Image (cartoon, rainbow, N blue to C red; front, side, top):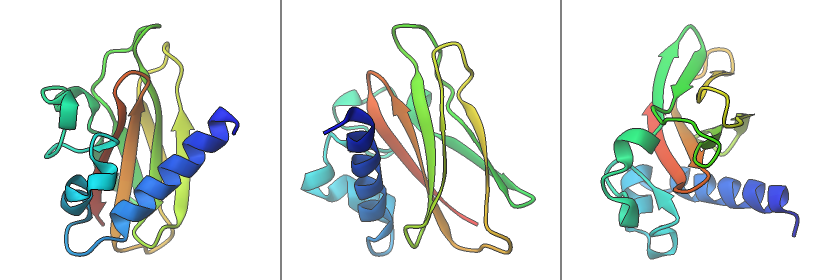
Length: 136
């Protein structure tokens, strides 16, 4: 399978699994053995304990836009690869990819009048997928 297709399929599956869970998708994803050490959150950093502050996406919502920032240093050997935004119903909003020279900051437009949960991922080339969820 082509690497990009694998990444798309895996991200979509992980995000859908996380947003499709009851009550607290992020907490439940962390408890799902199938996602342990695959999807990481601030509350469940798995084997990357101590790295949350650099990898968990920080989301600010204003004027129908999500601004996503990952406070991660960027170098050729170690960098944030992308941010992905998916609505609570599984609708893909957008994805921003980065190279090591970029700052890991992105903006994503929400559908007009949207209210509900949004799952945001930040992907590190060395430390995998980090997920956070916000309610708009």
